[in-house]
Amino acid sequence: MMIPATTEPNGTLTIRTLAMPADTNPAGDIFGGWVMSQMDIAGAIAAVERSGGRVVTVAIDAMTFIAPVKVGDILCVYTSIARVGTTSITVAIEAWARRNRVDERVKVTDGHFVYVAMSDDGKKRPVPAA
Image (cartoon, rainbow, N blue to C red; front, side):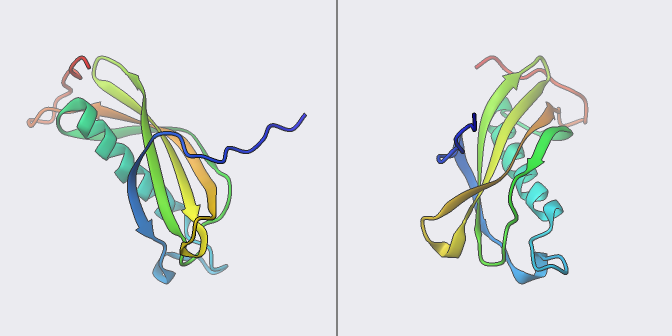
């Protein structure tokens, strides 16, 4: 039995950006590394908001590229807090492309990014209770 595709993003829209020609590979698709970078930025925003301060990326778990991003797509990155540890925060991230600047929306990537809360002197710090 086939599982139906998700048609609505999970989480909060955290960033939105336009895929430009400078971000393409020779096949004309947007580089996966560019998409991953946008996801890391969005995840860090969510982790900073949850932790109340500086964070650093320590791991990317289970990232899956589902569909290509094309020049002109609007990349929308959604985040939700998946887990909070003593010093770490795991953020579930989904990237969706809006094709041709209209309402057609396609899920292109998802994954879990792990951040550690840091003090100003570069040491791990506890994440405050919610």
